[in-house]
Image 1 (cartoon, one colour):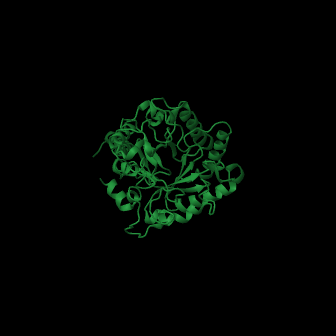
Image 2 (image 1 turned 45 degrees about the vertical axis):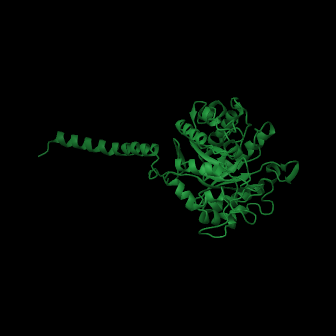
Image 3 (image 1 turned 135 degrees about the vertical axis):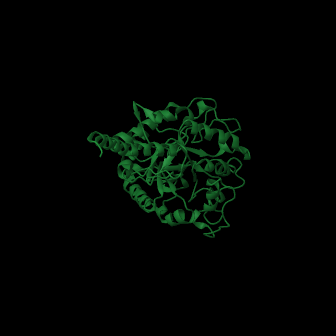
Length: 390
């Protein structure tokens, strides 16, 4: 016969065990994340960033693989069919097997080398802009393809004065509109800042990003991942040579923590984005050692990173030809995703070599022969799978 005292003791032990099991599971899962275990079981309602890893709503490690597309009004590339990128969803999701698109948005009148490319503006064509984005978001996120919305008007500089008010209105509107769709991410500004040899990062990189992180998180209450482009025109380096990146000239290395912890708060789901072009491939140089060293240092800082743009305009592109191969060889095997510039190019940066160079123009859905050398070939699913498993 079991005494009353023993019975009570057994009940207490049993109850404590039931309480401790979830805590032990949480501890195990957290350690799995730190070890980059792809089978982590932490199902949630939104994407999360755990250390250097991005975790999907299904609880799996998520490596963004994809391309830039026309969102709205960038250089007039979508002027004949606003929101038309939505029609490309089957090619992007099924043929190329991409899980992420970066929807490039122009908020101001678009000009290039003194020529007016588009007269549309967010301030006068807001409804058209939102209709276009709605089409894209609906088409892609219904297939669980991430849509990263990008404000693209301040390349190699920072918004000031009225431009900050414009950007505030845009992100307030967009964050409210898509806050309940976890597959929409917010890329605050494209490629800010200038390349400055041996100089500290402009304080604007921290100040402006803090302002819009607070807008999205505190004023709107959106938990969607926020993507922050590096300084130095997005390339986070001050050298076109083989020397290692100087930390004080790298926004992500020297200032990244200031966008995750400030004003006495911790801001979650911040992802940093590096754009890989001439500073990483100048003069046909292979900068693998420099790039590997940089990736290692970003990881040691505990930051999640993706390559938000990489591409070239062909084999004669002296200063960018090596860039996609550099990323393919070194970023993907380390779990750092990459996005091509561009699936619908109005320039020469095409994934294929024929027609308009759009990604939809592959000549075979199984084994295309018109992928661009040194660029499109690295983004084809079989090559991606090979790199991720290496």
